[in-house]
Image (tube, rainbow, N blue to C red; front, side):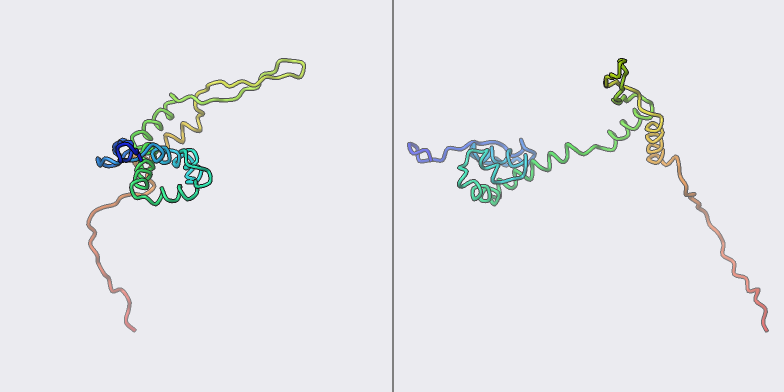
Length: 169
């Protein structure tokens, strides 16, 4: 509490900055730090300590903060934003597979060179993707576009004719 004015001192920020709605939330500095620290290891006690709460009360403070709807909502919004940014989109996967198939992606390889007198030296070189990897990329792209189909699509109309060719006894 700010005793001179009788108001709480807080920090305003928009939840949309973290991927939430347009609603303005009021969190103090410790609460904002708790929210970002909690995302690191999902440990409320350690997040409370790193946010500046006392080690003696960190457990209860962490649990109390997680029960606040606004703080839980801010954490959930941030987690969702992180998840969305980490998931590759279909176009991105297709571009990667195309580059791999064309051999435009290089990978690291460890090479051991002999220096003589029972000595050797390892170094990392860049090399083109292997033929096996390029073929696999082509195969995955072919499956994506339905080039390699094992199933045949048969369509049309067929008439059904029932023959009674069983002899009567």
